[in-house]
Length: 376
Image 1 (tube, rainbow, N blue to C red):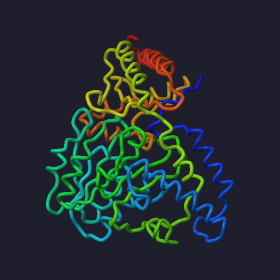
Image 2: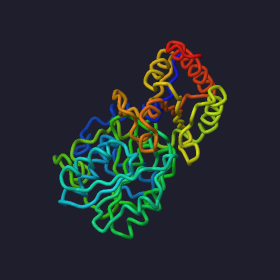
Image 3: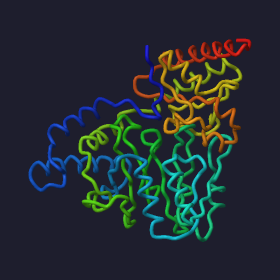
């Protein structure tokens, strides 16, 4: 039996999103920029989706710019702020997604000072440490709302409030927060906020950048002027329709009892296991833990053979042998960080899946220890 428990990497599509995407693909055959009836039908789907997303996250419809996903959204925001400047400080947390860290690193190669702020042992970056990093020449601050690996929720609002008083541009990566934490763009009052559909059961390859009224965007790839001259390229109408249809379809908070019971069973069966970020507010579906002495990638393969899909570190860096930068920033050493496993529950998962995973983890650990000549 195959059990999918890697919903932070990508969530299985919900039926409503699949139906909406298929219907849009069949019925809206026109280019949404065309003026004829077919184009107007496609445009209506895009506009309705824009309105639905805006209502869901508390912003004006005009603030929504559809993109290919969170990575593009983050890059557009960073490019828009820094492209007209030659120097200055840019601040981020040390646990940001590579879609933020890499463009900021590129900026540092061209004269900007990049400062990354480390979290505490629970994976939470303090308000004070973020504010202490701000100087008079700070141009931009980037801070994720929910960490994709640990699930730890970050104190974005307080940091954003301070940045607003200093006139500093703020990007909030809310890709992992959508559906798991309250998002109110108006209340946050930040310049940019990035989202992605496939984290909530929508299609892969579509996302959005929310842009505060009056903030200008600099296109990454100039072209036909779609999305009000903010993101050129013909809109992916079926995917956008699916994105809107997926909103609110999954109650991730319902997985908290399953996650909590899973962690308790795991600790009962393997006393030395260490659950990370359990002392902090977390996304209700996420469990990141350390099995001392075990290699996470090897354990992952054992679980894969048993039919389980989980993660070691983040999916976007799977295939690399480097230890998770998130865990290293949390103070773990390289060997301990490599012993990590992330489980993220989602649609279709039950307590039975969690119980079965505990049994599989115990069996895989015993098998690997036996192969290493250790006492099982």
